[in-house]
Image (cartoon, rainbow, N blue to C red; front, side, top):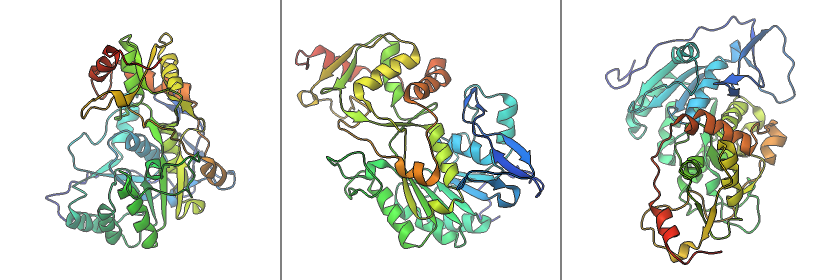
Length: 385
């Protein structure tokens, strides 16, 4: 293998199923005691709804996942393996390549781990990316952690026969508007902090690549490394008031990570998803105050005390006092529903309960509680009623 001294590819090759066997993902099964995990059912003939993805042994793909060791990638890689694909994770090797999910049995984890391959490298080392990917050859790329178009071009150069490039973009690319929800055809903001994702979408389009771009809104669920639900859970557990900027009726939207992973699976090999962009999130919206109450309900906490404040009256320095944009921010998922048949499985409280039970409720979280900005807010007399 090229650059053998730099790249390590763990050859735990999966065994292909006989060609006469169809692999049909079930709609509900157990993923660490929760709904979502797909199991393989063996049938000679399978009838599925129009547009559904039917993964067979003959259509098993050699898939490269850029990233894959955190949050979205952890759930996505499991589904890909379960559906019979050969999955290679491209990472810098600084974090464990695989990790057991909360509540996962040793048997299930070891079965997954034995089928995952690893390509160690830095995606910003463009020469290495071109050499190593060209040597391996891949049918499909899932780009979970791509931020800039310049990081994607070497991948495309290395894989001229690539069948599909599936990209994790962001609903943060939309231009702020009075007309909501955001739709895929809405104006985008070239000055957005996510402009690199916009430029990547433009690159994929200009190159004529068969791509699909997914634009999540706020993502939540077990193993979330962003302080979304965790921010609320820390305060609820400590019995503290929850400071929310301004009126608290700002409307936002969250989507469960397992629903997002299923959406990523749904676009794989789907002709309807060719050269398309889709918003993916929950299909209901929630106010900031409503989110605080939903988190309390999910964790079995009492009704929270909510304190509203005017952010303009405080100087928090470089610290972020609240984990969401202080504005209405939500997107329509009707296109994904209509074209792909994607319907979110998790309602908000149900999804937050899943997250709490499998993560924070077990005593695990990504960031320690920091109430320093809360104390500034609560200690100042100028608080909105």
